[in-house]
Each structure stands twice: as C-alpha cells, then as structure tokens.
Length: 306
Length: 253
Image (cartoon, rainbow over all chains, first blue to last red; front, side, top):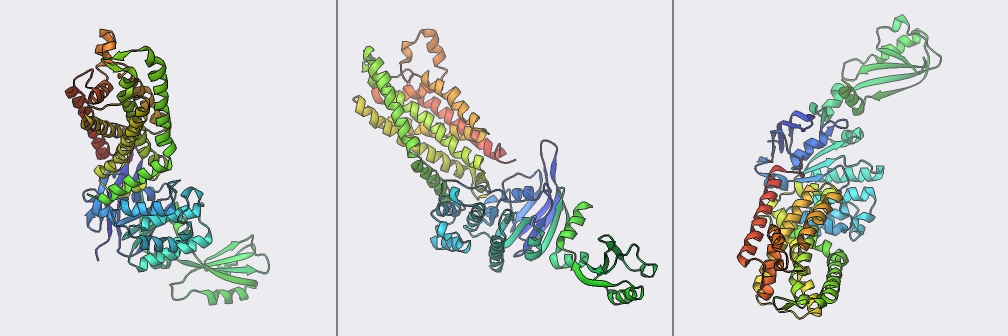
C-alpha cells in the first residue's frame, strides 16, 4: 500500500543560517499511529508546519495521499487535521461557534450532529456555549482537537497533544486516538512523554538536530534495543566482584549493596540460573531481586546522546 | 472556489462586530455627532455657505468618508492582526483556502461593516442638517469602492504589523492627517494656490471630492479623476495582497 504521506529530501533553513531540517525522508503508512520523538528544537514542529502549510520548505517534496502540498494544496490540506502544540484559541467565541467555524473553513457542509458527537467524545458537550477564555488549559487543548476533527480529516497531526494535561485526561485522549485509528485515520503525534509513544504508536521515528536518526516498528525497536536487567539486593556489602563471577556482565550499585546483571532476552540462554548458582558458591547472599526491561525512554536517551 | 470557507470567515468576522457593537458602531456615531456640533453648529454658523451649500450640509460627505476610511482600515487590520497575535492564524494557513478566499472573507466583512457604518452616520447627519443626494447610485458606488479599497489597505497593514504600535501607526500618522487635509471640512478652492497644488497629491482629496459631487454636484477635482485615483489605489492594494500571499510575507516563515 502506498504511504499516505511521503516526505522526500525536505530541508528548511532560515535567513539566520540555522538549518532546522537537513534532508528529511519519511513515509507515513496509511492508518498507522506514528510517534515522532525528539528533544526540543529537533525539528518536529517545523516538519509538521511544512506538511500542513504553515511554513514554506526551503527544498524537498511532500506528497499527501498523492497530492503535492504546494501544487495541489487544496486536496492535500483538506485531508489533514492539525492540533498545534501551543494553545492558540479565540478568546470570546463559544466552543460550538469555533468548532463549527473550523468545519466551514475546510469547506465542509454544516453537520451539527457530527459536531455534537465530537464534543461529547471529548467531554466538551456541557461547555459548548461557554466562551473559550473561561476554559481550563486541558479543555482548550480538547477544543483544538475538536476543531481539527470537525472536518473529518484522514490524517491527524497531534503536536504534543498531552503536554500539560493531567493523567486522567491523557488516558481519555489516548482513547480518542485509538477510536480514530480504528476508524482508519492516520495519526502522527509528537511527544515528550515516551510512555505515550510506547503505549500508542505502531511505529516510532526519532528526529534529532534536523535529521531522522531512526524509524522502526515499535515492537521491533523494543526487541532490538531491549535489554533486561536483573537487580539483586544484597544482604551484605560487597566491595568487589569476585573473580569467579568476572565473566558475567555484572555491575555493583548502591555502594555495594546491589548487584546488577544485564542480559539479552532474545539470546537462547539468559545465564540467570548459572549466575544464581555461582553466587551461592561464592557466598554472596541476597534478600530480594527484581528484573526491569529497558524502556523506550532509555533507548531514546541513548540514541540522542550519541 | 471554497465558498463555505469564505462564508465561515465572513460570518465569524461579522459575529465579532455584533459582539463589539458598542465600539464598532456606537463610538464612531458619537464622534461624528461631536464633529457636527463643533464644526457644523459652532464654527459653521459663522461660515455662510460654500458654493451655495450651507457649511453644515457641506461637511456631511467628508465626515462620512472620514469614518468609512478610518473604520475600514481599523476593522480590516485588526481582523487579520488578531489571529496573528493569538496564533489562531495557524488554522487559516493550514486550511484548504486560497488567498482570494481569505481576502474575500476578511475584507468583505470589514467593508460591510464600514458601509453599514457610513449609512448610519449619514442617517445621523440627517438629524442635524437637511440632506439631499443628487446621485444616490454614484454615492453608493463611491462608498463601496472606498470601503473595499481601504479595507484592503487595512488588511495589508494588519499583516505587516507585528505589534500594536505598528497597527496604530499608519492610521494615526498617515491616514488621519491625509483625511483631515483631504477637504473633509473645507473646499480645496478655499486654500492659497500653492497649497492647492500640494493638496492635489493627497489621494483622499479625490475620494472626498467625488463623494461630495454625488451629493451636491460640487467637486474640487473632476469625477473621472476621483474614480480613476480610487481605482488605481484599489489595484495597488490588490497587487500588494497578491504579493503577500505569493511570498508568504509575515505569514509563513
């Protein structure tokens, strides 16, 4: 299946000489949830702005469902809903008016039933007649999502959708995104909450300093880079790893009160059984143990630090 | 053509007018009434008549134009500046609309407002002095042409301005002086000949003169010139707007 968004060799430089994007190539598959991770200033928002028509590219090409975003901007843009990072809202309009305005702006005929459904799904229905200025930050964020959904987009860009949103609301928003995906909408989200990408995404891209440094299926990514650690809480203090245990990948932590063993979950033998045997032989006792899998966050941090 | 978008922008902007009806309509009407009291009654009583028209009646077209000009500029400049200021412009830029549609929506709404306002002021003037309009259709033509042209001009200022000072600067420093010196309150023929020539460089003279002609058939310059200069300014504004959207000047980085 052809990608719904195809970005090729996209660059963006400013008059100041700063280059925000250095030849980005990226394909977004139809119907997937794609998470774009990257530190602040990596170029996430710049790329989204270009695809959506808010900024001009310096060079390169973007196709949205076969439509060139520059030449055939009408067809391209009518497929896209955008929820920007900043809370840009009208102050004195009612929720209902501003969401209906968005639908009209995108050239769609009035559909009060649909707007009602969107507002209900986003728990905004009882606020529909309120002026936006009276709403909390989390509600304003949802108003912006409602505006983006009002014109039934095939592609939804969520730029840091859950920044400054409390945990419960965040879960609610994930639910909305899942429903959209089930309805066939492609979702591209940028986020700082790696937990969010881990929870939601089908594929993950990492962007740093204007370059895509990784694109991978989330599950594969977790497998490939996923290491597991066994942490042993020792009964006594150990100053040095005994020579008999030197061939294990061991580390001392917590001032000699913890022993950390790193292993690969994919290898045939994890070596845990023999390690525990050898430990007993060398007289090291432990009171507790736990295992942890390295999270996407660890992977991300290690990638960006490189 | 995305007519639904034009309609959405237009109605959205008009809704803003009704919300701020006090400052949009009432305050210009009050200030115009004050002009009548001060210029028409207090000073005008000492001026007998100009070209056969009483002074109070003579200033009516000038006063209407004064309000239409300033209100067109402020409506349109504020209309497009505000989304830039609050950031909601993102939606306009990401929507499947062409610049023609954006301009139709914003400039159409701004011009509608100032045309309505011009008519309200005209009606208010009718309470102070007897009015007779010899060429009502020409009067409307000049009113619409001026409202549209200066709404476009305001739209340009709104895009160019990156702060409230700039938004105010052009109307305050350029347009108001030009309007006051444009023959709102006097006939150009009352000036010494040297100043008369200088005055003819002021485009507002042509607007007011043409508009006044449609009322009383008295004018400082010929009607043809009036229409010509107004249309020329309209074309210049259209060209600048076209260029703004083509290059994304101050809209897209």
